[in-house]
Length: 143
Length: 143
DNA sequence: CTTAACTCTTTACTCTCGCTAACTTCCAAT
DNA sequence: ATTGGAAGTTAGCGAGAGTAAAGAGTTAAG
Image (cartoon, rainbow over all chains, first blue to last red; front, side, top):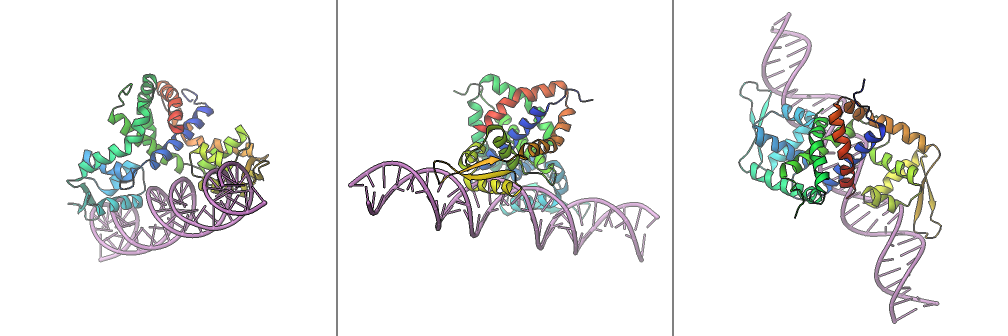
């Protein structure tokens, strides 16, 4: 049934590594900057254009109330605008403002500094292994 | 200088995937079970033997007060025992109790169920890519 | 031998970020 | 026209980690 028999040790190790690494990534965040989820949402809005909160929540695998808070935080900083949906007045359309793109870029740079530095210390083989696994990780995260 | 020029897109994607995946892993945890950090600590104690809170905190890359809380939770459930350090009375030695090993095994099984199920749906190539990247992830998490 | 400085652990408090439950407003189908 | 369901928000809760500071113990300097 299972195509490749994911053994328990692998599963446990992957789980532990991901959880620990995520803790490190969260901690390395600078003070003034956006939270990972805020940054992710803002990036989606910048890259893919305006969306409703519901769509964003599904995209980020988060419950709607959580997305409301994320959006509120972004709106406070003037990075996002909320407008009524043209057709359906229950809905709201969230869009990135002009300064958003620059802020995304700056925050991504800061947020990635720690990780980038550590990646730079890996051997080419290690980097290659990571790059090869990246699509799989993305698939799992989205699952 | 950097051996393989970790490009920004890779860094950003890796970061986003790890953070999102960790959120999924946390949420999928069964109710009655231990928190990821508690489980990780208990595993360390079972596998490597008794340790002081300070050592555990360094091992888990967590601040000492956080470790105190984790240990308190484990002690409440009778999974861990705290005894005075033989040489240095400032320190405390934490050790796993008898039922700890079984609980570790049971919780690890539950905690990994979601991940195991999704890994089982990957192709053999995808699984292989993950397995190849696992040591690198561990290295990063420990860095 | 006494005092000062340092270490380990714990307590108290705060913050972030996710969740569920419940409410409001609105659409759509009978 | 009414009723059922959907989208968003509000309110409140809980997990988990961080900082600051106190308490107890140790080590080193004079």
